[in-house]
Length: 415
Ligand code: AMP
Ligand code: MG
Image (cartoon, rainbow, N blue to C red; front, side, top):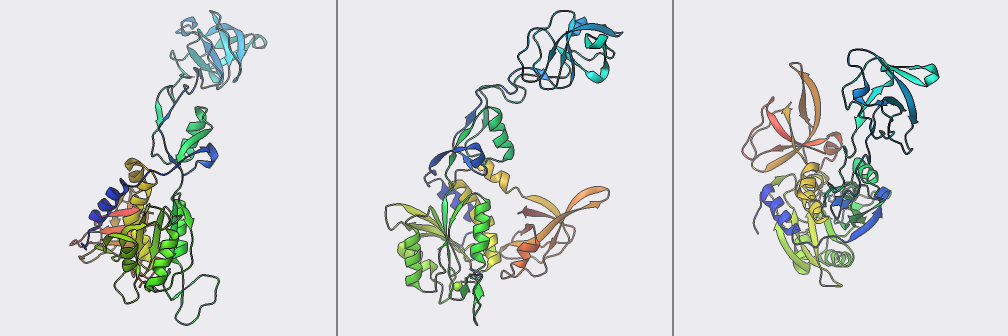
């Protein structure tokens, strides 16, 4: 099987994502829609604001009633608070008006109250400083116009989007149901946290790392027991999980050791499309599918390495775009989530043979009077050192055949 570059691997996975059925659509309350993906375009059925309204506390007037070079005294013909229906403004008068209140028909300008003086027990107003025609009025539809698409299918709903949907009167939205991802951690040496550790054992950190990352991206997680290093138990567990899960992700056992059974297990249960990628850390990465044991469905399968840092890097760099795509995110929404930036390297690295993702910390510093992104590496880049990921907040991408000198501009993937 071919040994893919990072770019080829991501492209292969994204291509495969096009062949995966869209998730089920769920109609959910706005407050339950956070982090969910819109299943349809949303078209506004109202203008926001629905009518011209005042941006200030002050007086609504006809601009033509104002003296251009002097003060103007006008009778106050009505008082308009927010939330009330208004009648047209009588010619030659002013309306006392408050922020958010509708502009009466006939008025075309609001003078802020700081530029006015109330007279005659508020029956009249002296406009001391005039304003340009149209000033201090928020126009009908200035935020959203009736008939416009405010959010597109494939958009991930954040706080502002939820507020925006509420602003056009929508209480429920059609979203893609979060996919359920089943996690399998392989390794005879693994023990769950909370248990005593015997000689030769280590704690299963991958389950927690993976579940937390995936949940933060909006997925549901199905946890399962640790799977020992045998072909039988690996096949059995994968087959069992294929009944309910939308996707299966494993860790460990995907390399070429005597006790690595993921590859033969997938070959027995379905197909392996990708195995091994030119990435460091994380070379033993697998992608394929499992034929569900209870129906004709083909369940996507991602086999991640065992080392926790490799799990983190391969999930972020290789698997994330694919998972988000099959969850229904548009390409635009996916890109928005993983926009690389540049920073000035505070370190040097020799040229390398496999594309490398270095665990690093991004910060800012004033250089020559300008705020500048700088990036420093965690000392120990071993794939078994999860502290590097915890310490850092980004990955530095080092391309094949390129050395990095201190002061070079490098590509950084924040997380
Ligand atoms: P493997 O690919 O199965 O040989 O695993 C590579 C390395 O990752 C070994 O040192 C394993 O002990 C370690 N490892 C595998 N799975 C986990 C896990 N779930 N949590 C922490 N370390 C793991
Ligand atoms: Mg193992």
